[in-house]
Structure formats: C-alpha cells, structure tokens
Length: 456
Ligand code: NDP
Image (cartoon, rainbow, N blue to C red; front, side):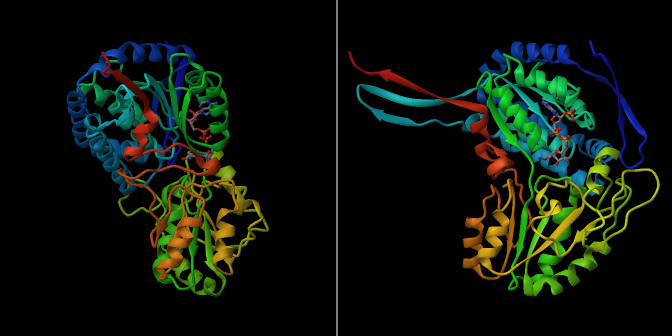
C-alpha cells in the first residue's frame, strides 16, 4: 500500500494542485509483478492487434488532448500553447509507433547448410524513469516503442509532475490495453527509481534526466547487465556565422534557450556568434527578449512560464553572481510563483561556470568566436553532446560544421531538435541510445538469429 501522500504544486501559484499517494519500493515490486504477469499475453498478441490497440490509445489521447494540455500546463508551469503542442506530439508518437508492430523486420542471411534469419524479440518488463520538464511527452517517446515491440512497462514519473502520467494509465485502460501492460508508480527516485534499476525482473531502464543520476543508473544496471537508454543533460551550441541571416538567427535564438523556461535538455544555451557580427546580433536579440511575455501559463499569449520549483530557481539564480556580464534582462511577474526573467549574458568567457554547466533555466550565454575552426573548437569543448545549430548562408560551411560538431542532433538555419520520425539522443555524456524514429525500436528489442538446417 502507498506509504504516504504527496502534495503536487502548481509552479505558477505555489498552490497545491492535487494530493496523490506516494509509492515506495514495495509498490514498485507489485507493479513489476503486474507487468511481468501481463507480458506473455501482450507479447503473443498478433502484431496487427497490437497496432490496433495503439491506434485506439492515440484516439483516446486525442479526445483527452485539451484536458491533458491544461493538466500539464498547470503542473509543469508551461505555457498552454506549448502544452497543446506537446500533447499533439504525444498523440503523433503513438500513431507513429502503431505502425511499428507490423514493421519489425528481420534479415535473411545466406549461410552453409540451411537458412539463417533474424527476428526482433521484446525484452520483457521495461522500467521508464522520466523527468518533470516534458512529463508526458518524454514518457510517450519511451512508451510508444516499448509497447509496440511487445514489452510491458512500469513508468515512474518525476514526483513533481506525475498528474498526466496517472491520467495516461487510465486512458490506456479505456483504450483497451490489457491490465498490467502499463503501470505507473509515483514515488521518489531515490527509492522507487532505484528499486526499478536493481529489480531482477526488469530487463531494461529507459531514463531521461540529469547526467549525475544517469551515471548512477548506468552503474546500477551494470550489476545485472540491464539494458539502458540514457537521455541526459546538454549545453548545446547555437553557432551563428557573420554571413547568416542575422535577423532570422537572432529572432529564433531566444526561443531556443527560453522555451520551457530553459528547462530543456536541448536548450541552445551557448550562442556562439562570429565576433564581428556580435553587435548587430545583440541588437536584434535584445528586442525579442524584451518583448517576451512571461506569465500565467494558462494565458494563450504567454511565451514563458515559471521555473519548476523554489529549489530549482535558487540553483538557476546561482549563475547570476556579481561578475555575470548581464547584457539583456527581460521581465517576469512578482508575487507567488517561481518566476525568473529571461537573461542574456554577453560576452561570456568560455571557461566560466555559466558557459560550462547546464543551467536548465532561462539564462543564455553569448560567446564570440573568430572563424570556423574556432567555432567548432568551442562547440565541442564540453562534456555534453546533445543538440546544436549552425546558421550560415554558405551551404558547404554549414555541412562541414554540422559534421564536425559532436552532437546527436544538428539543425542548419533552424533550432529544432525533435521530430517523431527522426532519431534523437546524445553523444558523449549527453547519453546513450536513441529515442524516436525507427531507431528507438532497437532499444526495446533484442535481435535473435535463427538457423534452420536444410540438410537431410
Ligand atoms: P533527476 O535526474 O534527479 O530526475 C529525473 C528522474 O529520475 C526523476 O523521475 C527522478 O525522480 C528520478 N531519479 C532521481 N534519482 C534517482 C535514482 N537514484 N535512481 C533512479 N531514478 C532517480 O533530475 P532533477 O529533477 O533533480 O533535475 C536536476 C537537473 O537535472 C536539472 O537541473 C537539469 O540540469 C537536469 N535535468 C535534465 C533533464 C533532461 O531532459 N535531460 C530533465 C530533468 C533534469 P524524482 O524526481 O521523483 O525523485
């Protein structure tokens, strides 16, 4: 039985939004047992039937789109326009992976004395541990391929933002997914998350969160050679060459750092600008940052909401010490709520803490560079490697730079990182494995080779 109650706060008001039961390690064990019991039948379901159930789930999510968007906006403090877009992506993710059960293809391999072919087997029970910044979206990136491949799941949302995950579990049942296929456990990472990682009946952990916790999950999973997918932190570069459309680059740059109040692993928080274009770039950037509408997440005109918690606001504030070269400061509401005004630092020394650590808040660092080689050197001078952008009108330079950057995702003349049909994940300490696209299915299946002798 749940061992306590958890008060879920609304970051824009600091008021209690809902009280939910808080799970402990025993509840995780029970959820894993339910998932294990449901696995044989789910796995054995004909691929077309599994596809049909995932389509029905997408339909049910679509019907609940506005309800989920409002819940996510209030619980995570994100603008409702963003939350609506995210719930649209959740629906699209399940539709995409509804096509997967019938497309899990194998190879036929010529060998002596018979025929070899490969099949993709599900892993079993998969543990999904997700953060508070894009609660249901990031869960969907894991749930979609995991379920399509025939696995059953135990989802552990972040304690700060469990509400859409809990609603998702109800919607999955309403859509006709059998009991036990989707299980949600709301409890602390240190107990419930850790128990999932060590549980002998959990075949794989798919995790999104901090690099520090990702490291401990990789270490814990090593004990049983558990499979892991890790989507971790970032300090992504946005490289703006002087020959770019500077207006376009400058007007897009704030959204790429201040979107979701900077609480985005893909935040392009290091804006590298060619030195002789810095003044022109900053002029255009300043206008956009000062015009940003920060406020009530439920107002359709709001572009940025509050930070997730008081503790997180204190962490973000620690980057604005007396020496911080504040060049632009937008506005934010007073009063209750974990507000923080969008802030641009310029010029930033690449050796400083603000330039090196993931801030995970609305603080952008503008770092001047001299030439292409200098831009690539600065871009790669980090332990992270998740996303990045290159802005230039020179196509060859754009491609050279995109290839030279050590990140899993790069955009040219754009700051977008994520599409349902394309692979997403990090180089270096930004993670391991890929989510989304058909690549994600590799992380939820094992390849089995079958040899059939054709001799006598
Ligand atoms: P965490 O990495 O601590 O949390 C992510 C998830 O992991 C949550 O569900 C959390 O549970 C769970 N968790 C925590 N500890 C363990 C553990 N020992 N074993 C298993 N699961 C665990 O992120 P924070 O919320 O603490 O954020 C800290 C920093 O991490 C941010 O400031 C940011 O820099 C980075 N971050 C990166 C994200 C990304 O998208 N890559 C997302 C979130 C954070 P619970 O919270 O319920 O305790």
